[in-house]
Each structure stands twice: as C-alpha cells, then as structure tokens.
Length: 322
Image (cartoon, rainbow, N blue to C red; front, side, top):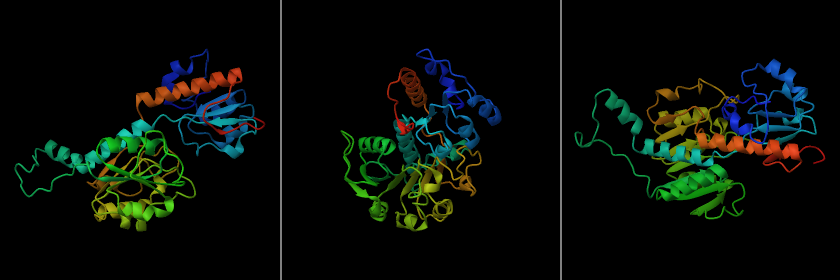
C-alpha cells in the first residue's frame, strides 16, 4: 500500500519488477487502517499509531524520505522492518547555494523594486550598498551527513572556505571531501563566530532541539546568513525572528518550519513574511525530479528484496530475529 502522494506520481517505477502496489494516497486514514490488516508493505511518509497497530502483518514500512520521526516505531509489530531512503543531498545543497546567492546579492529586494518600476543600481545611486560575492567567505556546517557533504562540495567549488561541527569530528570524511576544519559540537560557539554562512543540516532529536537559540545567534557576525534545511525546531523561532528583525544577523533562508506535523501551510507563528532579509520556501529544498525518481527506484528495489529474501537497503529498524 502506497499512501505518500508524492512518490505515488512515480508509480511506473514502483511497479518495476512486477510489483502491483495499491495506490492509496487519496484515502482517509480510517480506510487505510482497515486495508492495512491485509498488507505486507506500507510505503509512506507518515503513519499513525492506529495504522501501526492495525498492520500486524506488515513485513516492511518503507519511508519515502530520510526522516522517520513520523513513524511510531514502538507501536509496530516486532516482525516489521523499517527502511528509509534519501537521494536529496545534491538538490538541497543546490538550494542552499541558490538562497545564499539570493541573500548576498539582494535578489528578492531588487526583483520586487523592479516590478514596481524602481531601477535600484549603483549606476543611478552611488551611495547604494553593494552586495557581496560568496568567494572567499566561510561556510559553517552544522552536521556533515549527506546534505552537509554535498553543501561542502558545492561551496568549495564556489571558492568558499568550509568548516563543520559534527558529533564525532574524528570520523573519516567521505572520499574526496576536504574541509578547512572539522570540530565537535562542543566547539559550536567558535564555529558560529567565524562563519559568514551557517547551514543547519543536523537531524532533529533531543540533543539538537533548540540547538540554535538567542545566545548562539548573538555569537554570529552581523553580516552572517543562516540557512536551515534541517528541521524547524533545531532553531528557536522567536530568537531567529528577533535576530532578523533587529539586524543582529544579515539574513536567513528558511525551508523548514516549527510545527512538527510535517505539513504546515501557514509556515510560522511569527511574521517572517514581513521581513525583507529572508528567503522562505515550503520545505521543498530537496524536491526535484531526480530526487523522487531515485527514491522510487530504492523503494522498488526493497520490494524485490523483500519478495526474494535478499537484504533490504537503508534499514533503520530490523525485524525481530532478522
């Protein structure tokens, strides 16, 4: 059973290998609960506890993205494996660089003014503050997983210096990945103080919730930018809004929001949309055709592996006895 509306668009790939999944993205939760009693696999981005309790025969819950915080693991039967997929690192890294360039060159402001008939340029206003090139500036990464590694590669290609804070700074880097320095999360204050762009990529967990608050934002340079492509609650909402409104930092790109339901069309409880130093996107930084085609191929491969008794990819919870 496939309940994810996005991955449902790639049903042709899911059906490769002779699979015939039940496409149920448009079905209400109550109907999904009833149908799950006969299902072997659920392909989803979220799962309710009633669904988990009903799916006693599930052999696999296949999450359609990297995050599985919306899957009630404790409510699943012991024999149910859980796997995820990713393939969004490059797309999100491109989004990060795009928004950094937009903020550095004030693209939103000049676009808005030109639509109003205002030609804002140093050619006509010699006192106008110029935008900044990103070459030579320092990116500070919070986290160095798939997304962080891809951001590091693109930032270095743009001529930027790259440093990162991670839980285990001594663990080996990916082949070909070179950084100016890698520090522990305990050295986060120093990284914030020496970065022109801070990119948040860590997962949301009890250790990272509220990782960036008022004190951390005060350590950043007034000319610095913050980009959050992680989860909203990693950054304190009020502290970030105040820092942007007061000019404590120069700008921010926000792709993730604070409500934890994963789909929030209002975006925030504070008026970020009224600020002119932010780029706001609806948690779509990883949404490219390549991302979802690759995820669909991963999922189809896991369906085949489950059917033929071969090992599953990207297991985050093994079935009991496996």
